Image 1: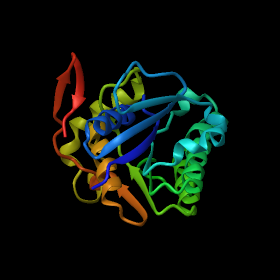
Image 2: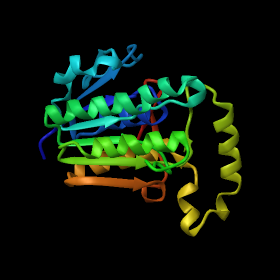
Image 3: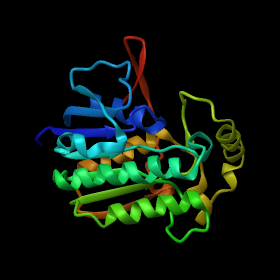
Image 4: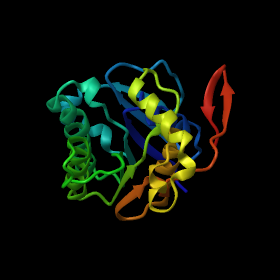
Length: 233
């Protein structure tokens, strides 16, 4: 198998940082580019960091001439403060990235949306996620994957009190979430990252939706390199 190239957006986020470590360790990838607002404190022979203005991604469309585009962008209403700013991060940026991927003929576009994503939802958050999926799916990309995780588990760079409370609440009653409610169980960010890379390397054409209960749920193992945690394969 020839070695692959990838672009990652949102590499500083909970799933994005797990995904980046996984890609850098994988023998399948030769080049990994991250598009960031500010450079990450990370050096690796495979890694290339490009500081961009996400409001004008078309200026950097040449960066999307890769095999796989991973979009891990996302915010919260609390952090965005307004619906307009939330739309910019969770809708406009991912759609712009997908259009760049389409123009540069990337093989795979893989994006994290959210459980309950639905264009017809009465809830603003879920409606925006559904709109994002709908508009990206209409583009001519060989393979498009949407991942709809439930509450994500992992170590964040910032404290989100509401999510932390929800995490404890859902973890304590996870044994009740069976059958059709199984998809609401909290899921480890590292498992979402593993599922994204697996989907990309399978090269299945078409549009695919991965519900939370269909995402890989095995154990995540870590090793340490130069005192830093890295995700094991």
